[in-house]
Image (cartoon, rainbow, N blue to C red; front, side, top):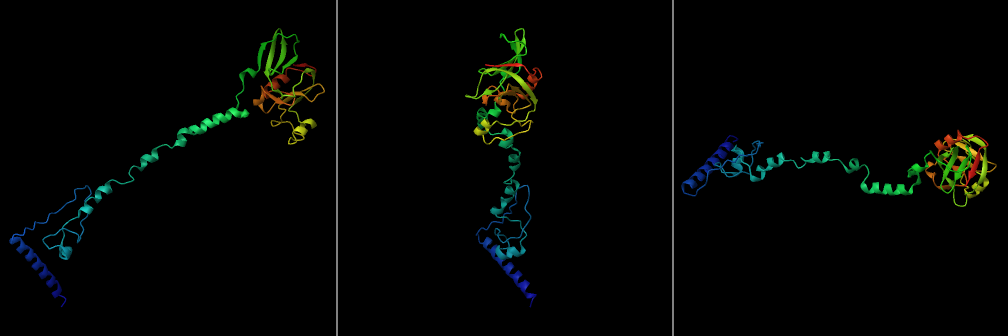
Length: 274
C-alpha cells in the first residue's frame, strides 16, 4: 500500500507536464522559465521555496517537492544591497568629533559672565602697579627715618633724606574713621594677636573676641603700634584692599611691604598722618 503513493504522485506530475506540453503545441505560448541570478557581490544561498515563478514542473506544490532552481522574488533580490550598506556605518565619524566642552572649556556666554563678575569681586581685582614699593622724589622737610602717611592719596612715605623717599601703597580708614596727627611708634610685633576693641565689637558682634597671630589674622605679618591709641600700621590678609578706604582707622599694607618697612624703622620713629 505504501509503495503505491509515490507512484501516484509521479504519475500526476507526468500528466501535468504532458498537459503543459500539449498547450504549448496548441499555440498558447508559454515561455520557458527564466532563471534569475542575483548580481550582488554576496550571492544568496539556494533555498527551496513555493514562492517561485512557474516552471516546467507545473509550479506550486510539485515544484516545491522537486524543484532545485535558484529562483528569487524581487522582494529578496535587493536584500544583499541593504546588508552591504549598514544604517550605522557612519557612527564612528560622529564619535571622533570633539564635543563643545573640551573645545571651549567654558562656553562663550559663561566666559563673559565670569569676566563681568570679576569686575564686582574685589578679590579678583588686579593690584595697581602704582602701589608697588618704589623709591621716589620727596620734597618735604621731614628728616630721614620719618614716616609720612598721605591719607587722601593712600601712600606711606619713609623719608630717606636728600630729596628721596620709599613709597608704599596703603589702605586707610573708611569714611568717618580717618584721622590725622603726629604719633610715634611705641611697639613692634611680628605675627601679632588681635583682640578687637569693644567699639568694633559693638559694630561687628560677629567678630571673634580674640585671634592668635598667623596668616588668617587680619593684622597680617607685622604690626607697629602708634602712641597710646588702638591704631596700628600693620599687614593684611586682604591685599586687594590696598588703595581703598577700608579700615576702622588703622593703616594697612601688603604683608611683603609691612615686613620691609618693619625692618627699616625702630621704636620711637616719628609718624605724621595727613
